[in-house]
Length: 166
Image (cartoon, rainbow, N blue to C red; front, side, top):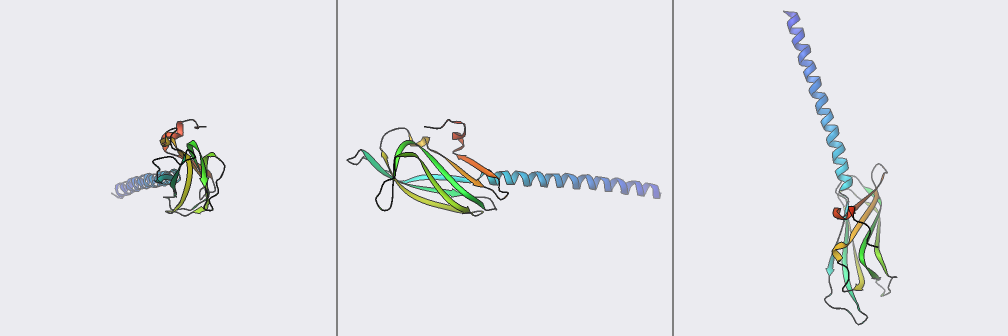
């Protein structure tokens, strides 16, 4: 009878080990997936908060855009650089009323973006009121993750397969 009890105990222990191994494997896989989602989820968004309805005498119109970087993960990312690519040339209007040279790329930087944190910028830009559709605008957000690996995410996701507008 002790042989039967020993064999049953060994079988139950083996089943327990298999189950524990399966759970450990699942936890590891879930952790890897969560880290990937945290890195993929670092996002930049932009919204025109003031949109002109007519051009100024110089043929240009002034928009006010709000840009926001968001890190949904638990860990800080650093050396964050955002490049927003517009489909039209624009001039950035500085707070001292000076104008930067015409370009199609708005570059924004922040040294650190904490886990669960956001950073906003407000920019005044001047560009032609008509031209290529502004919905073609896209942005790349580059950063170093907690493991010091360089990463770049493009938003919107649909722009990831499109060629640059230039």
